[in-house]
Length: 234
Image (cartoon, rainbow, N blue to C red; front, side, top):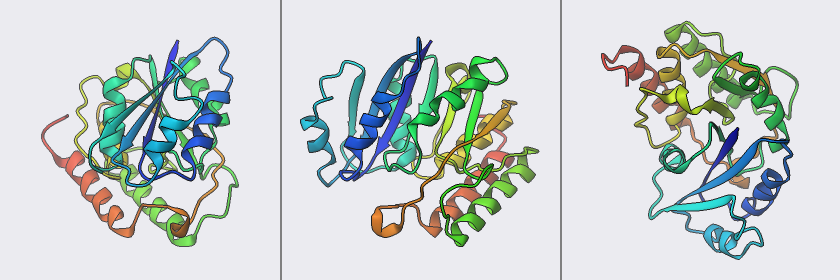
């Protein structure tokens, strides 16, 4: 089996090198890895660091660039376009989530229990999450559960893992952080069963580079409603 690890990146010069090192260090046994870095028009030194890194020549690593900043969804879609693996895993570049969780994330897929796994930050005690962030995530997840009859605990998690075939018949359109609810909504609408596993979470602050804002919550609600009540299934 081949695993495609898609890393959307925007202005992460402080963390990109360490993150890629952590991903490279993960031992998955016989599972082949490819690492796809989708650089979303970074304006800091991210691209320079990627080019200068000692792992830039690693044949398992490919970097693709958006000429301008489009958004996380746009970057992930670039990664999906070039991914060649049997299973896709989305990995943010900010060190909030630990690549050593890959084994647990892949286990339900390897066992044949499901084609889609989410890493939930709320199924076990984790790092201190600001109250407003916790409330926003709980609210959006509750809303998704109501609309689609699901029982998720963390719709907005960045750790989303799925077999390539899980996206058959699904067309992703969102380019920002609304990609998260769009993907969830369309997987649920397509009848895919999402299994959650607990993951460790080390949240960072806005002054440390966190990019999501309250307006993204409004976009998430709109994306969920649009996916639920649109006559189109894609």
